[in-house]
Image (cartoon, rainbow, N blue to C red):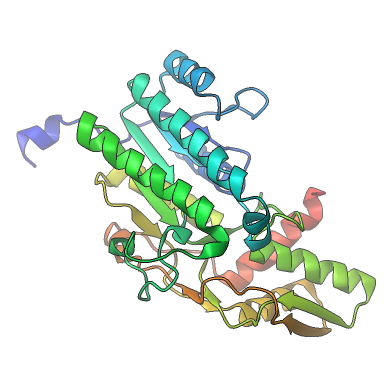
Length: 319
C-alpha cells in the first residue's frame, strides 16, 4: 500500500453515523438493520418528522446532524398499475427527494453517499444480461418511464457532484426486491408481494382460479432485501467510482414460474390463468452483476425460502 493510500480516510469509518433516508420501506429498513448490526449509528426520520421533498428542511437537518454517510433509499415506488396511473408523482416526488437529499448532503459537507436506483433505468430491449454500460442506449419501458427518468437523473446528479466537487458519492441499481417490510397494497405493490396477496386471498375464499395480468412469459430476477443490504454495506466500504453498480443475483425466471412458486408457498391449489389483454412490461430484465461479484458479493437467500419467509412475515405483520 502506498503512503497516499494509507493516509486516505476510509470510505466508511468504523462505527459511522449513517442517515438512512426511507428507513421504513423495504430497502431502507433492511439497510438500517444491516448497518446497526455492523456497529454503525443509524440516523432516521419518519415522513411526519421530515418530508424529504422539502429541500430547505432536509438541508437544515443534514447540517445539524452531519452524518458520516447517507443512504438514499427513500422513493415513491410501485408496480405497473401504479406507475401507469400516477406518472406525475412517480416523476416529481422522486426528483424532489433526490435533489433535496443529495444537494443537502453536499451542503452539509457529507462526503459519502449511496444513491439507490432501479434496474428499470435500462432500455426495454437492452442486451441480456444487462451491463451498466447499457444506460441511455435505447428507449425505456413506457409503463414506468417517468420513474426511470427520475432515477436516471439521480445517477447524473451523483456523477455531477463527483466531477465538480470530488464527492465520494456512488449509485447502485438493484433488481426486483422482496422481503419483510414490502408493500402488499393491491393497487401499488410490485409483482411478488402482489402475487402473495392474490393467492392468499384466493385460498381463504376457496376460489378455483386466479387470473393474473399478462402472459406470464416475461422473465424477472429477484433479490431478497437482506442480500441487497449486504451489498450496500460492501459498496459503502469498498466502491468509489461514478459508474452505477448493478445489484442482483444473476438468475431469472418467468413470471409464470414465479406464480407457481408463490402459489405453492401460500398453499393455493387452484388454477392459474392469464389475462393476455393486460401489459407484460419489459420482456426480460436480468442484470449483469460481474462488477459487484468482483468486490466479493454473492447472495445468500434462495428464492423459494425467501418467498416463504416473506409470506410468514406478512401474515404476522397485520399489513
